Amino acid sequence: MRQPITPRVHGILDYATSAAVATAPVVFNFPTPARALFSSLAAGYTGLSSVTNYPLSAKRLVPFKAHGATELAIAAALPFMPRALGFARHKAARNLCFGLTALTLVVAALTDWNAED
Image 1 (spheres, rainbow, N blue to C red):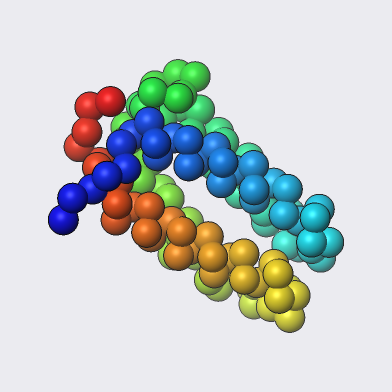
Image 2: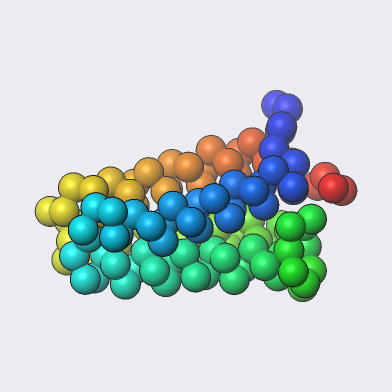
């Protein structure tokens, strides 16, 4: 299968996702536990992206494949967060967890992890 997402495009998607994850809790009035989760995720995504070995980073410390493995680990935990943190009844916050999981899996499947960009 052709993997059309280059490291540069992956970086653009990472920073855009961070911005959306940081903004959503305010726009959709998430409960406090969801706000804390998404603020942490946005900071974590941005921090990881800024030190990943790809074109849009500030310092290339983390191998691109390790970046991907970290994202997959987060995606594995996200579906369980609404119930674990007590915001499963807040539709927008719950669905953002599920949507981020799906987005992460699709982007991971379409990313060329061996590309030199």
